[in-house]
Length: 409
Image 1 (cartoon, rainbow, N blue to C red):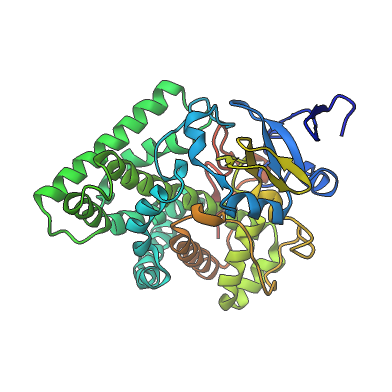
Image 2 (cartoon, one colour; image 1 turned 90 degrees about the vertical axis):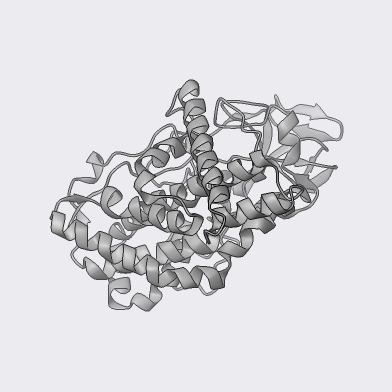
């Protein structure tokens, strides 16, 4: 604590640090998180937009903030939420608490159960093999992002949700509005969101004209039309649009992230090539190890006074939980900065925690397993086709990832 710390009631509140602490450097976790976990696990931060917040950096504290019913997301709608983006997004499940959140989540959760997802694995493998075949025909060098990482999750979510894959170039562009911080002007973000909602609205109208279509979008339309108390028309459109965007955007980013990390850990890559049965454990470890977000978002607001990490959080105060920091907490993960496929228990927070735990986590796991296994086994000589310094990384977005990944084999 500094001498300029403010005294608030029985607390001493440190001055807020600018956050994120530094410009993202590839997939490097900022060392400031380690210092804070050790010395100031609950710290005050000021994001580019919105009010000040507490930031939790230790694993147990992050789990508390994300999972304890004394914290909620709904107050963000009435507040100047701490955020990385100029605009506030008030709609969707991410700004809801139970029971409204539960009402909407139940409508989609059954499509993403482990059993349903496993039934999609053979088809996902077919898609992955066809994409790798096409990339091989294209010949090295080829862009892994363009040929495999982008089309694989898009085609899977299209078939699950019931969206024409032929429209991928349009809605993939619009989806950037969901993850943009400063990569797009505000007017473009709104234009893209309007285009996405309008597009989904057109598909909803099609399902009403042809009610027998058996896909997730059709099921949501039937749920709306058979009992309008279950979800409103706006909720229907935004829920489906959110599933389409979120259902591919992060996995598109993580596939090249994972391959990049493997190429920089050749001993672990060699193990996977020798024993593909390690892939599920490898994917869990990569989910822990790779810092997908550029910072923490979606603050939880305390509903009452709560002590977290030795700090009294007053009712109404926002708290952010750093997943990247929690996943590198040495009190939970031995030698946390090392990629280790032999971790027995790996309770990472790569998909979040609590009621807002990623609804598509099982689907993303399966897609990542298929993608990693296919690339590793089908392309045993895989390597970067350009020097590391020439790779281009995303900027002005909520997620870290490669814009392109030229590879040879």
